[in-house]
Image (tube, rainbow, N blue to C red; front, side, top):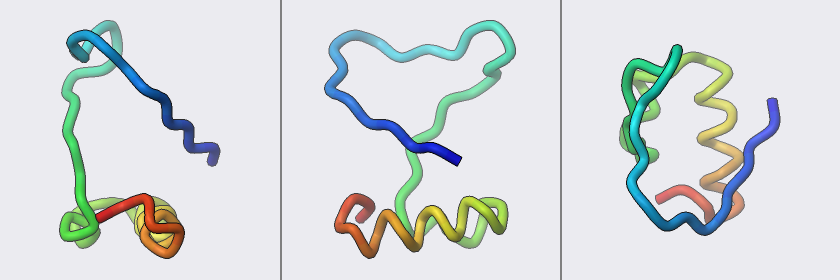
Length: 50
Protein backbone atom coordinates (compact mmCIF):
# COMPACT_ATOMS: atom_id res chain seq x y z
CA UNK A 1 0.00 0.00 0.00
CA UNK A 2 1.26 3.45 -0.85
CA UNK A 3 -0.17 6.60 0.69
CA UNK A 4 0.24 10.03 -0.88
CA UNK A 5 -0.61 13.53 0.24
CA UNK A 6 -0.53 16.86 -1.50
CA UNK A 7 -1.93 20.35 -1.29
CA UNK A 8 -5.18 20.60 -3.18
CA UNK A 9 -7.40 23.43 -4.28
CA UNK A 10 -10.88 22.88 -5.61
CA UNK A 11 -13.81 20.62 -4.85
CA UNK A 12 -13.30 16.88 -4.39
CA UNK A 13 -16.17 14.78 -5.72
CA UNK A 14 -16.73 11.08 -6.30
CA UNK A 15 -16.60 9.98 -9.93
CA UNK A 16 -16.42 6.82 -12.05
CA UNK A 17 -16.08 3.81 -9.73
CA UNK A 18 -15.74 6.00 -6.61
CA UNK A 19 -19.17 6.16 -4.98
CA UNK A 20 -18.37 8.19 -1.87
CA UNK A 21 -15.63 10.33 -0.30
CA UNK A 22 -15.17 10.42 3.46
CA UNK A 23 -12.69 12.15 5.74
CA UNK A 24 -11.58 9.81 8.51
CA UNK A 25 -9.83 10.47 11.81
CA UNK A 26 -8.05 8.08 14.14
CA UNK A 27 -11.29 7.85 16.14
CA UNK A 28 -12.76 6.10 13.07
CA UNK A 29 -10.17 3.29 13.27
CA UNK A 30 -12.69 0.65 14.50
CA UNK A 31 -14.79 0.99 11.33
CA UNK A 32 -11.99 0.50 8.77
CA UNK A 33 -10.43 -2.72 7.47
CA UNK A 34 -7.56 -4.45 9.33
CA UNK A 35 -4.97 -3.22 6.80
CA UNK A 36 -6.30 0.32 7.12
CA UNK A 37 -6.01 0.02 10.90
CA UNK A 38 -2.29 -0.69 10.47
CA UNK A 39 -1.99 2.34 8.20
CA UNK A 40 -3.92 4.50 10.69
CA UNK A 41 -1.53 3.38 13.46
CA UNK A 42 1.52 4.24 11.32
CA UNK A 43 0.09 7.63 10.28
CA UNK A 44 -0.69 8.48 13.90
CA UNK A 45 2.82 7.47 15.02
CA UNK A 46 4.20 9.81 12.34
CA UNK A 47 1.97 12.65 13.60
CA UNK A 48 0.00 12.68 10.35
CA UNK A 49 -3.41 11.55 11.61
CA UNK A 50 -5.26 13.17 14.49
